[in-house]
Image 1 (spheres, rainbow over the protein chains, first blue to last red):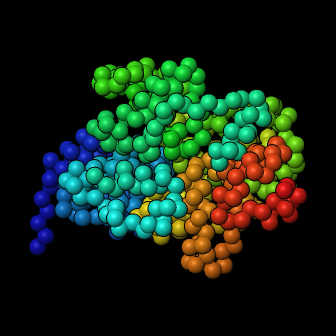
Image 2: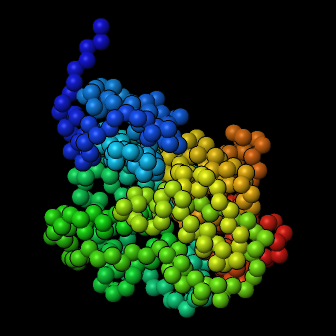
Image 3: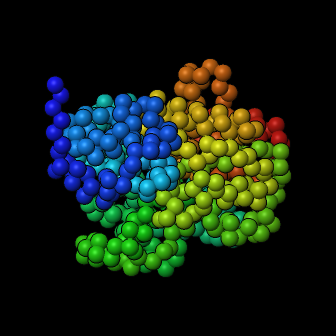
Length: 131
Length: 270
């Protein structure tokens, strides 16, 4: 049997870092419908928010969804409840990064790509995905 | 990009001065409310620009977004502004001084029109806005976030034919190109395909990162989608420089990975 334990501390931390109110989301799914990267995510944006609302810490911290968010803000522009979803995704990344769990292993990045790509691509990825 | 932008401003009688001792804005704007550290770099840039007593012209969409959002946040939240000012040698009062070249050219449209020397009317140009010029609208106030027109108007003012396409406001994949290149290839492919389906010969952008993704990833797009036809990508100032009749060395065309020469020759623009 799966034991579901709501982690209120996690919900509070997410709300603090993002400055968003999780109960504002009524799960219409419009964020996911417009997200250009939802097809790459194991858990879609509205599902990530559901994990947050229910305080499902383990599930939330396991999902790859927030790492595919490019902060393009299409969902933010379209949310009928005014929820700033990219801030919620950033909150998940922030919790990982502050626990020293980054996504990118810098020495692993292809050298040829690094020489070819504009510095702002690399700097942006570092600021979002490394601690 | 840099050469063509300077040349375009010179042509309309504006001398651009580089901000002394400028540094990186930190690229993306932080979305964590408790991360004040990331606001320091944009704030110092704004403070420097304020000392120079002018506007700060920001062609890159990412820098523009970061500076505008930092400015907005500090204007709304004077407590944060005070805390950060305490740690700076410079001080900044939160005034609005950030300007995008497209805003300048919109406000000086007649001047731009009067300088056009070559007719680009046969060139059909897909105007790609991407994300960060437009969103979040409340903070950026650049144009309508879903149906903007400033770029099309700019392209018309330099005499080319703008092409509207629905995905012009969708993301190219941005920095995901570093860690999830497939996602960036797919996103960029979809929007280029959408531009082509709507009749675009070329696509223009204002963001150096979009420019890279749309241009440099076309080889990978072709691998994933063999029927994809390459399409030249331009930085907006390159198109303007062509229209103003600039000599070829000022266009910076050697930076383009997908060759722009064939289409430009086809329309007698080189």
